[in-house]
Image (tube, rainbow, N blue to C red; front, top):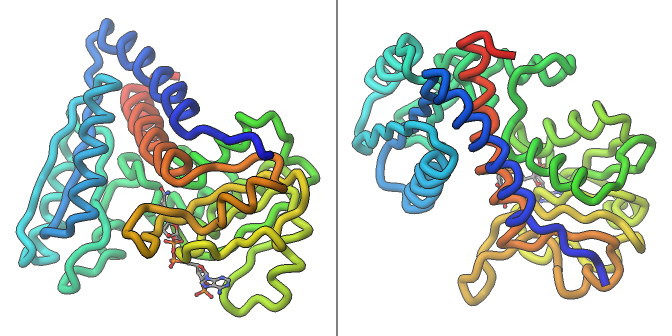
Length: 284
Ligand code: NAP
């Protein structure tokens, strides 16, 4: 049976490190602020934003929420982002996605100052990740790397397979594995022989968005299996992309859903906000 990689344990360790550093900075008079903007009434977004608010309280940040109406215009949203860019008490700005259809997400994201872009979605930060010279890493892939590190498995030289090529998960995930000298294959909906490619993976990361997509016949014995997926099963329960019950019989390590990557995504947002504040105050 696979070892379970606990997002609960690893995220608590990460947040504890952030909390201790934040406390030490507070003693020097430094207060860290995260602004979260939510537009409209998306229920899932509301749950995520509430979770981020709780995390801020836990680590000792000041969190400021801006809840805007569904019919907010792009100009109004951009004006708010520009105001927050110039606000010295705010070190990180997060615009919760998705945005209503009248707003161009790319235009809004690229208005956030790259120095406050704690989601690391701004084109400048994305480019910096490509060249391996970055201030922020996107939260989900960075959280996955923490989970892999917690196993003690060295990425260097391993066959790493990422299923999914989205800009927020799959592509940066592949890049982070590559930066640690993994031999990386990215799979997507047009990939041929997906099963054979996955079966060869020492480290398999699934970011597809389909329940039970990764079946036991796709997994190498002893592999590290990371499940990024967040889906609902027939009973409406949260589940990942991996057939956990079967795959855990052959994998060496596996993340559960819930209790895996999702918690790490939240913890890494706290890390990025701390780093943004340290950059602002020029603290090493
Ligand atoms: P996305 O933008 O929809 O991308 C899904 C990817 O899966 C695409 O690249 C797609 O390929 C690929 N795909 C779809 N069907 C496939 C198939 N039959 N074979 C191989 N590849 C296939 O989704 P995302 O934003 O990356 O998110 C992926 C999952 O992770 C979702 O469940 C999402 O909710 C979850 N998620 C979780 C967290 C977290 O914190 N845990 C954070 C972000 C996302 P094409 O490019 O060819 O279409």
